[in-house]
Length: 415
Image 1 (cartoon, rainbow, N blue to C red):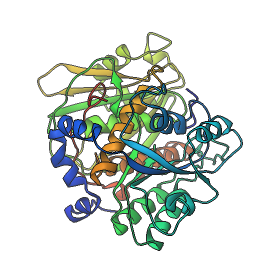
Image 2 (cartoon, helix red, strand yellow):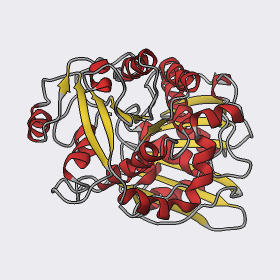
Image 3 (cartoon, rainbow, N blue to C red):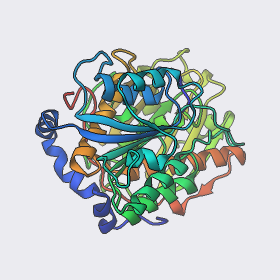
Image 4 (cartoon, one colour):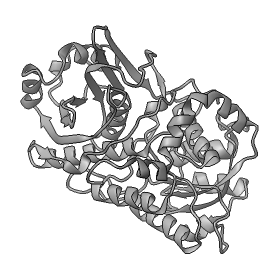
């Protein structure tokens, strides 16, 4: 698959504004709810996207709505695509033909897509897919996708027509922290049910294990590969989806640093990284060499949570898979790799879409967007640290508290 990829913790009132608390309470009944939704009338969604080519994020999400989970005309989500806005027509020939086949109206503005060309908000939700396409890259290596612009224009339409509906924002909330925070704050202010994030936390895993909420996690190590921005986000999101389950929940991160070269292995030797967990993760992921210490291009995102828990996320040129390992008190190490299966039609996106479907039908986020706000912030600050040659950055803005949800990964819930 082509790869382009508030200051303090929020109050319970803010969680409930976004529906996060309600989502947490309902997850235990997920399978029954999934069956109910499977037999429900489809809900309508508008899509706001950058570009629509085969295997783009628009394809592996929207084509499942148009042509089923496996893109073969079979069963799909209880959703129907009502309208679309495409930011870049060049490169979207594949999508344009598919939309023509299904008689989906294409509008030349985001407001028109959200209103389906009318004077109201007739759709039940909006999917904002700001990934892929020809967009500039800044000095930090961040591709400047128009996610903030998309969300601003979507919510401007909500305000103009005095109605909000759930919004899913693909991948990072925004690559730029200040934009991500602005988007989150606007969602809270306008009481927009809001979800964002990676497909990998809900993907198939090479070694399946259940990590209960409130686990006594002693240490954790994550590993990722490919570009620091485009795939560093996936790596951090899978890492956070594990460590948020530690005892006393999540309260955010107090500092971030990006290490390169010899500084990576110096941090390992100084005891920052649990080497037994590091070795266990490297053992289970796909890689091109046997010894992690031979990876001269290794990068380490080093961060400390407000409760003192140590964050360790490697990005490895020798790696070919995202992985996470955790060590529980008085228990063996648990480690797994996240599988980006290609067939049938990138199924991890089907499981992501299932979570989106749940939000559109319930009107509540299926899992907390604060996780993605935090990971977006960690990555942005890590890239700033790298640009500043490994300077340690204090991050009071990342003191983001939230309650995690025990949401399943593939093959659950049943599609």
